[in-house]
Structures are given as C-alpha cells and as structure tokens.
Amino acid sequence: MNPRTPVLVGAAQVLNRLEGLEDAKEPLEMMTAAILLAEKDTGVGNVLAQAQSVRVVRGMWGYENPAKLLAERIGTVGAESIGTLIGGNQNQVVINETASAILHEG
Image (tube, rainbow, N blue to C red):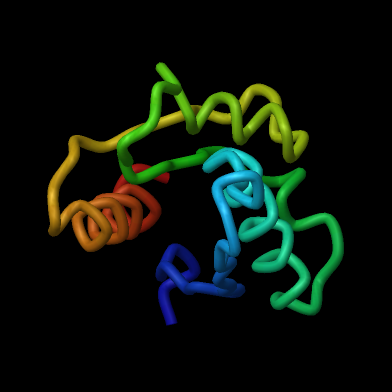
C-alpha cells in the first residue's frame, strides 16, 4: 500500500436531542465533543496533536472560521484551517479534497 494512502482512523457522532431551547448546545461545543470522541475511537492517544489540517463543513452559524476555532480547542495550533461552502454535497467534497491532498500533496 502506498504510505500516502488516505485512511479514516476514527469516527464519532454527537446528537443534541432537545427538551427545550435551554438545552441547546453551541455548534462548536458539539464539534469539539465529536472530534474528541473520534480520537478516542482510534484507540491511539494523542492523534489530534499531530493533525496538520482541520476542516469543517459550513453550517448555519455565525462563526467566521469554525475550523480555526476548533483547532484551537483541540490543541492543534498551527494546523491549517479550511471551511467549505454551504451545500448538500459539501460533506463528500471535503472528504474527497482531503483525501486527494493527503495522497498527492505530501
């Protein structure tokens, strides 16, 4: 296998089922929880500290650069931060572009 072959190593999902609006969590809080759970899912410690890029699919929130805010929260200071446009296919676009960058850009 090519040593630059992209591999997903951890996954997680965070839900915020509401009883009322006072139970609503900030999107950045949920992103942070999800990425920390995904790191735990890898079975390897300290994976996030090695991240070189943090990428966030755009949602309906007021954060100017959510990827940068997330990178700061998880301790990947210095990692590039990339956001997407709003659109139904952006989840797959960011996965495809990330995999391509890993494979081709080194």
